[in-house]
Image (cartoon, rainbow, N blue to C red; front, top):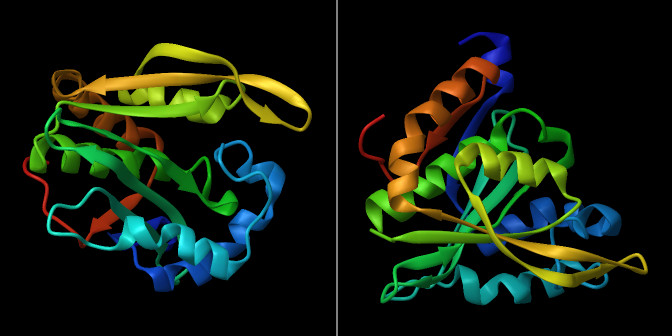
Length: 207
């Protein structure tokens, strides 16, 4: 493995409450977090973050959420992503993703998303995934578009930050759409980013 490959090698594993202390500082940058998090009006301390995450990280007999953390080769937390509000009756879930500032524009958000989409559609047999983003978050829009997510609606003026209102964009992806898109997304990731994601949480079928 070359030095560049080591730099872009990440382990993607199930998240625990102990991980919160390692990335809590991300959420102290309010202007940055406000681009991604609609329900946190002010930064939280580590203990408050731990409590707010507790329910999502408690593994029930029928889990309603699955959260994972990407860790760099030198042990730094690089990003978190998960499936929230998993509904096994209707076959859907919400898919949030957050990459640490120093690891952005390296293909990590796409790599983590590929793993989650495979988990949702190939392991859990879900039918669709939904996500929400602030209309001026162009990075998230670009990543979602490359994965095949389609805009399905808006909450007009539903995101209030820094004294201004932005639309909340609702985007969705169907399993059949991911099946058609998956190979091209993988090929594009390999061509444009030298990122290696070692999954320790599940083994995806296929590539």
